[in-house]
Image (cartoon, rainbow, N blue to C red):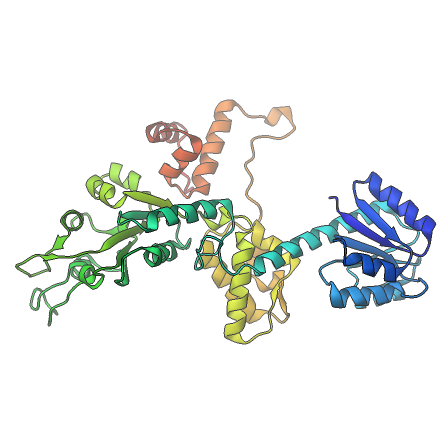
Length: 455
């Protein structure tokens, strides 16, 4: 790793030697022989790390560490101590030094320490930058995200929001599909009605029908009074049909007719009622596969899928993970009245490495747990669940340096298809899109290679 290093030592020859050695190793050093001059320079130029001697006339290295810890704690300081001077090293650490190196300086060891310090500084800068983000520049105040996949989603939301076209929001469980639907509703022009959500997977068929379309008194057992239904309750606004792929096949024709004619007849009623509602649906299932397997009507699919929005999984959103984590830290710190201000460097690395199968919902729960359990003002690795602390990165292994272990092109294709199916959680439509195959070709390859991602 390269970076800008500020060297402070009253020995000019030492400064020149360190300057030469570090330049040969790719660093960009600047040196001063007085600590007060170096402090004044820090206000003019940004550095990734400071390397300072301890024993200097005027302001000592210990005093420099204290000043930096007080005014610029974001810049790590590495102290150069005398040979075997453990007491001095401990004093430097207590004064705020990030690490220390003993004289005579081992340049190989110094390079490793500088690499760690610079990595720490860069990650802290990223966390600080993310924690300052209050609102998206494109007005998506309720959805947190800076990554390219989220910027693409924001762009599509802005273009779609002002229309009355039906929208199908696709994405894994926990990615925030309902939040996207709420944002579409809030940004809609000319619609003053309410946002009415329903999870289609939570009710049995007869209750779901009554909940959507309403019923008349006496239409069935327990129907003691008239019920208007959610379509009419959402008049002038938005009806959000979450997990629409779970709607029973028998109920799908009625829903299709209602969506096409914009009129409904309550259960047990004898007249139709017109309504004006925008329909937004969401699913975590592969509806195109469900259509091919006759588990979902194709005509209903085309009706709800006028415009499709894909919400990316959290693992595909890069440093949005830290942006969201810091948002949740602040929220839960306020809720619990604990003095928790952020996330440690080590914990941030673990959060970035984890795959987040439960997406944003899992991250929220993990941060809430960590805030409740932590004893420090920043969340540490130990505050998070074991599966996050010990998570190994998922790697696609095609072979090794041993010629006897190299694989054929056919085996390479099999492994890669299996890897993609695992990453997209068996969503064949998404897998075909990533692999740039038509769905029928993908099906043939899955059968050929006997691939069952669930195994």
